Length: 453
Ligand SMILES: Nc1ncnc2c1ncn2[C@@H]1O[C@H](COP(=O)(O)OP(=O)(O)OP(=O)(O)O)[C@@H](O)[C@H]1O
Image (cartoon, rainbow, N blue to C red; front, side):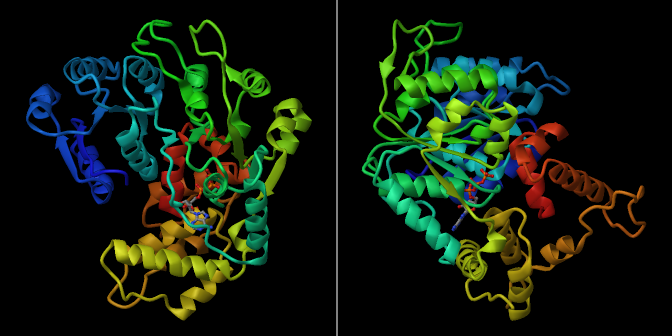
């Protein structure tokens, strides 16, 4: 965390206020909550607030988002530099875009992914430099170590070290949760660009209509609500590293625009007179089969060649042998310390089956499972009972029309099964499955975490 922050959450739903408080408390100095937005300016007057999380709708059943826009304008009129993050339902994304054009720094779709919420808030401590949540200030310490010395991970680490010495474009492939972003950060930190920015962009959640303004930037007055110049994320990464996550989801028209910026090594902001040169190291990642996409025409071959000078394939966790054990210990230590439960141990019998478990969600799933096992632990051992029960559930039951009568939580059962089937249908592609289910990727991950998928 860069500095202790004081966050104000404004939402008329008490459950949301509590959930935000619980989620953010360990990471910030204070989380204030406010159910009545009419008191907002008064609260801001008498309290030091570093970030405001603002709901878009306050009146019961309202969905226009106009209230959120109204209060956003009020905040920015009185505190022009206040970072405001809008909280919006999935269907409100267009409104959220409008809010960002009016000066909001970011938006979070409800239901949110906890890590996304935490990241969005923490990155606001640096929000004056770059317009949105994807820029990370130069850091000399790696935020996450790359745990694991199995043979496939040793090969990956060697490749990381080699490639870090050059400016070659890198494509990282691997299933969801295998650590693609962690690897990208390591490459940056080991490279000569380490003192400059690592700017990450999640292409999977970037709305199509924000692509150009977010990546290439815009000039003040170039469209309604463009109240100040915004450099865009490519320019923000100048001399540093640009990390394009979930690149496989990029629609073809945007692929063309990206390719031309990469070819010309220059970007033209919306409303600008001409291009500005950029010097970036590009790292891309996807869990899509890009070779297949190129073959079917869904991904441009020329763009593919440009981004994959060097390719790093991350093995799934189930193929990393003893790394599972090492990661179990590493995360156990981390979470027992975080929850004040040091001294808890992992039973040998649990280690055995966890070592053979398939870990479809890879390291992300392992980390969440250990955190939950710490929270549920009795006085001696981490409690993996929930994971054991869920992993024993049948993967699919295509011919069974009804849930078993002894299923304790019918809704959860049906939801889990539907998500599982969607994931299977899309061969583990979280973005596609989420889209088919009408969920954001964040909401999808939340459910995958809940059901240990
Ligand atoms: N080798 C590792 N050691 C420690 N933690 C790891 C490792 N690999 C991944 N993680 C942790 O697992 C989680 C998922 O990692 P990351 O976001 O990098 O995966 P990803 O492959 O980019 O996932 P997605 O494709 O879903 O975006 C993060 O919390 C990360 O810190």
